[in-house]
Image (tube, helix red, strand yellow):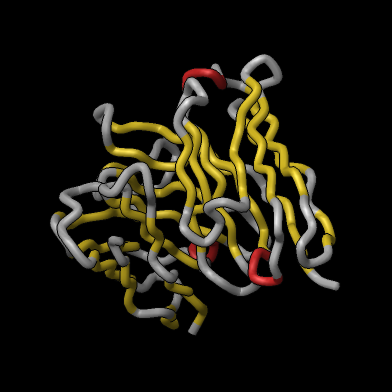
Length: 122
Length: 108
């Protein structure tokens, strides 16, 4: 069974740092692009960051660029999101998701992890 | 940036009703459009990808259509387990992605 399990969320003060992890199982992790998506309290889904299969290419939403870093360890089948300079508006449930390509080009996210809650507050 | 706008933001319906949700892109995205279902406290679940392809295991009462800028998710006969929030997502601007704001389907 393909499974993604996030961890590392918690309460952090404004300006602080946190590292999220996403443990993957049930598929060949190294072959897939991976994503982080977040959802603020009562809000919609917002794409945060993406890393390609070899880890050499990363992309970020403008709202997190320069503060968040996505990475992967294929030996551990784990995706990471290192978050610095956290702000109150970073408070959200953070999901990891696997990228799948229909016809080789049409990207969709499947499956998603259960999410980990990050709360930025003093 | 490509903006995705869903309508309505919420709707009330009864079991057995036909439900239609629309998603409009701010520019053409061909068929690079996905639909997800999210229930409270749960992760989003893929329903439809590439505008009209049903994900394996998803009931056939769900269908998607459209291309270009206008897309539709239809539930042909609403079931109790379908009360949830639905999100569209464009993947045309890969490697950035955008979601619609969501449509909450509530019980009438």
